[in-house]
Image (tube, rainbow, N blue to C red; front, top):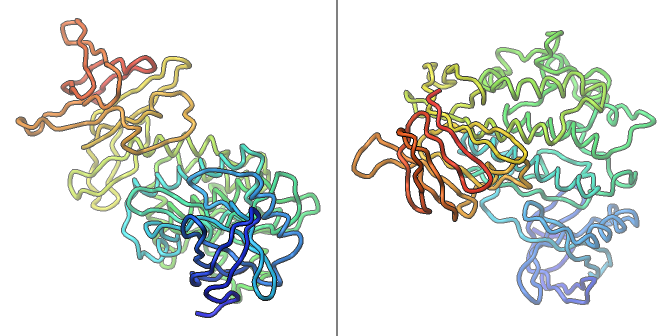
Length: 445
């Protein structure tokens, strides 16, 4: 594969370091990506096509590098690069690890994943963009092409961050048509891409991730003979209609052509259906009614905590977090058996979280905080784990994986200390003081 830069070409970063081109990795709409060797390790270099290497784009990239934004969920530009035989510029970023896959492969059903991983990926996406917005940066091109995820655990990486700008900056692109807010698609005079329009794009991305379908593509799209730019503007901007609009069924999914989204929507718990409906009805016409990151964050974390495994077929099912009514398995149509519930209550301020104690269920550090900075599902964040008794199959207990002693209340009303590494038998009514910040109660329903 030949590109703009030859192998061995020497380039210079804004800090004076020399980098050497080692091979081409791929190409996109704005430029080509190369593997380069730096004085310390290999990096990826995005090099702009001449038509895209504008003074405005250069200013955007230099500004992003200058922010020194350090977040492991982003392949952020961290050095500006110039040189080459024809001049030009680009930027350095870390190389994307192989475990991260593109969403197009998911939509083509080429990846093996699970509801747990997809919900985790959605939560990670929300928190990543929330972190960006909290710093006054609008991404402006949230879409399926700019984000990668690990289908095993839901870790995510946001790529192509060179179009993000400070809130209110009108330079650069407005986004990808399918994901753009309707007012941007229409070209309304007062419409400017920013964090408010990012909220629409984020909701579209979440819907596609969880439902494997676009929220505005129903029968109306099937009636379009030529999906040209004018038709797309009608579909996404001038006459947008949610496929599950509760008032109008004019754009309902077609049972033959859109069977997947009919099935995935039916399997989604009401807490998610309600947010999607709000965003793609009221939010289509009033940007202030779009679902905020905090709303998605709370809903997705609750759904993740209450996923249960069907006793019949072994498939994971999303359930309504605060409901004691078992649903129907999306795969085998059997009535689900709900495992015991662990109600975790933070002390200051008081916030309740519901966790279903499915096999190998885990409690993490963020469960013990009212407003955690970030949800982390790694071993370093583990504070409790449901384990089976080694000599008594079918008997379970909660093992203390934290660094603090727990205090539990026995059936006779006396207290018991549970040191790190020790377990307490699981039973309905069990009360546990999880260190100094939260307490938990086991419920049979």
